[in-house]
Length: 359
Ligand code: SF4
Image (tube, rainbow, N blue to C red; front, side):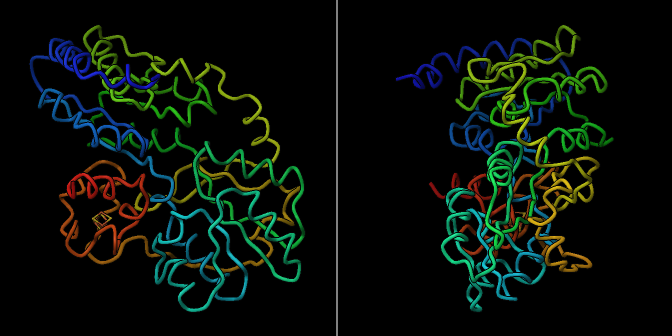
């Protein structure tokens, strides 16, 4: 089996020994990843326990659903309650808005439909021409191309898009610039990197002196990523390395990047719990204004409430605290009844930790 060689326990222990030997004599090494799947691998396989206690591997804003600001959920909810059919991926359904989620709106009689692809939303709109449809497009650079392709291919007039796609490298910049974060390394996300390639990460070693390694999702990928970061630290030579070269090409996916360029422009975007990040969001280019739900329906949301009372998602999203440090974790906030966005999706840090503690 292809994956088994990347899960070999003996090799994992050998790698952990090599990492231990490279550890600096003093202080903590803080490594941040920005991908829900990396967090799953690290938690599921107990990689933190395998590493020396003075390595901290923290989860940054790598869950696309968690970082959608409440104001954008509110916009989708407002449209749903006005009679527009909202289509979205399943994990978007329960993301909290200021007052309610799309699931709550559905309970109040709104039409909210889960789709498995953007094409499903296109087909639904074609079938029911008298209804107005909106696809709530959430996701990072990995899912943005599929939204872009449908728009470029032409969609029915009764379908428009609430584009909430975000870009990962600008969020990494925010973390790199946070004075009290003191990051010593980045594990860059494998999936996003298959699309964007290596170039957008070069800034981290070059301008911020932070060793950066693109890593795959198997346990040995992550451990080898940590090893490469430690090696860079020990040599005092921060650079960008691609541990996931079996999948990630230096140039990324050229076709997907072209498709995104044709449909989107980059704008400043609000991230839940973080605030506005410059050049971090895709919006539709003027040629596609007719399919832009923001423009078409002009719903005004003055101010979204990202955090419910007691919720610490703002700190979990940037890796400042662990989910277990939130007073609501597994008390008021559970996978069955999530309070915060980080407990909703399988890529959310709180949800991943909740699953691990329940086994
Ligand atoms: S446990 Fe719930 S409320 Fe607390 S940070 Fe996580 S998602 Fe937010």
